[in-house]
Amino acid sequence: MCLRGLWLNLRVKLTIAWIGKTKEPAIQTLTDEYLKRLRRYADVEGVALKDETALLKFCARGARPHTLVVLDGKGKQLSSEELAGWFNEHQARNPLPLLFAVGPADGFSDQARRTANLVLSLGKMTLAHELARLVLLEQLYRAFTILKGHPYHLGH
Image (cartoon, rainbow, N blue to C red; front, side, top):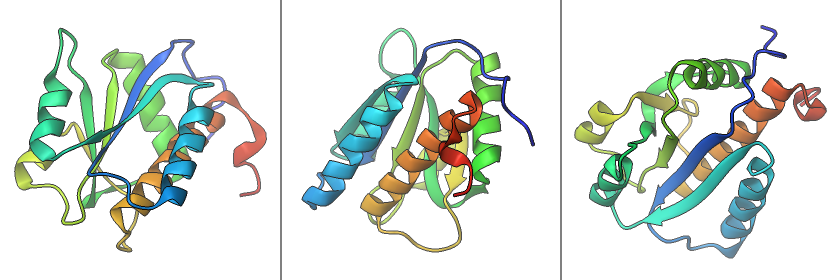
């Protein structure tokens, strides 16, 4: 699937939220690095939230609520190219900021999954939630590079 050239020239608003404090300094360092890389393509922020209730309140805050995407093992699995295509399509028809959420170690509730516009799985393997955050950040960065025709994605 060739996505190059489809990307709209909009400045995307993107929030990556995770539940709980980061325990490992290396995870925070890599989180900061990928947020920095993503800022080349989007207005992006990373936020640590106390719990799922705080996440749902954050999602609905302000005059412009967010489109919620939660990571969950029961969610839809997409290739990197499919994620880029979904992202591009979504932005073309829905200007709401995107909120990608990584849950706590025990996952999201049924209510959170029902609230989400997309329930996304990173694969069949179980990942520690802090590691899932890094995989998500890398895949979002990869999606932007696919859409922009940047060589990062080639050969990986």
